Image (tube, rainbow, N blue to C red; front, side):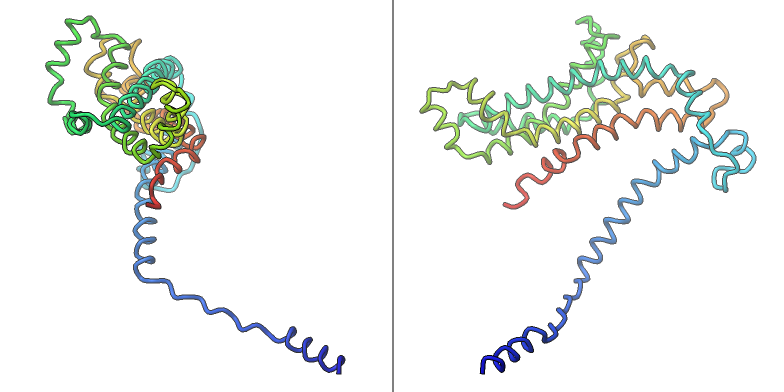
Length: 296
């Protein structure tokens, strides 16, 4: 009898498992992926075209055009752009402007967001609306009064002035994002800290600020890219070429009567490398910051 039971058990064990049926993919998901792939390709084409153009000699494109199969691909344009445009000096200028501006924006925005998110007072919402509405004001509209103000304060043609104007215009977005994130933190954290005798500053620096690291990393990546790539403020508020950021160095690759687009493309690709490298390094924190609150 035991042999029969063992045989039946073995037969049941060896019985083939019916294959699982895969659920059909909904048409909406197919359409979504198609749209996302199309958008990704549309964003990548200009960058890839700039890289392709930068690797071709101008003499070849002048004869065959840009839409043609290349005969020669080399890095001569990169070497020429690096030396002719004096890119190392302008890279340093951009870092002198971007790094302090990003640090000030994040620190001041975190302090303002902490007050607006964790304390209730009469002008709480109006102040948040004021910070948010500042982003809706076009920069070109107020350039004339800003230019006169910078002249009167001695900030014209200084890198300090570029840092301050970037801080002023970038704080609104950061305050809005950080305040919404801090509002999602449990109130019990602050209450427990108060019971333990922690003051406002200690609550901010040791409890709230560490918890906002993903949001700060995402905002820091965006702010560095925006401030680093800024061209408008440097063009209007800086006069000396030695103080210009790297985005203005592309003008050194243009002639009075002739412009080598292959050379300009090489310079543009090199200028874009720091922001791409920063995103790759902080990609984990950046994605985490973008998806905060997505499960609510």
